[in-house]
Length: 128
Image 1 (cartoon, rainbow, N blue to C red):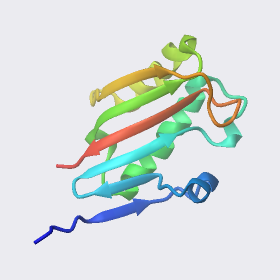
Image 2 (tube, one colour):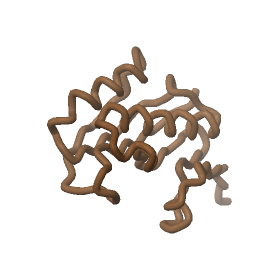
Image 3 (cartoon, one colour):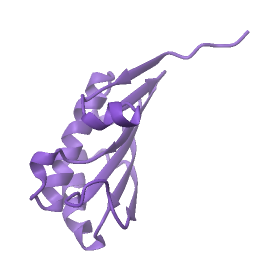
């Protein structure tokens, strides 16, 4: 007998969700996986700190829509175009997660979908 998993797809209504056929987040049982998230186009002139804060705000909403909270985040993956922006993004990450201190990986990439994007962040959540 196969066991069925409960799956809930979360949308942020971003245009690329339909183009690429993905969800902002997916909850499967007690786990929430949040897709790589960038700041919206309204942040095209922002620095990496502001873009990271905007992306983390979108992530926080997706996690809440899936029934979780930032305190449940166990891992993040941060992609940067310029490694020199690491301190700015780290500041945003630290301010948002405070004492949660999720496991995290920082990776420099050569480009992102839009030329003005500086940071993209993924998050993984384990619910109690």
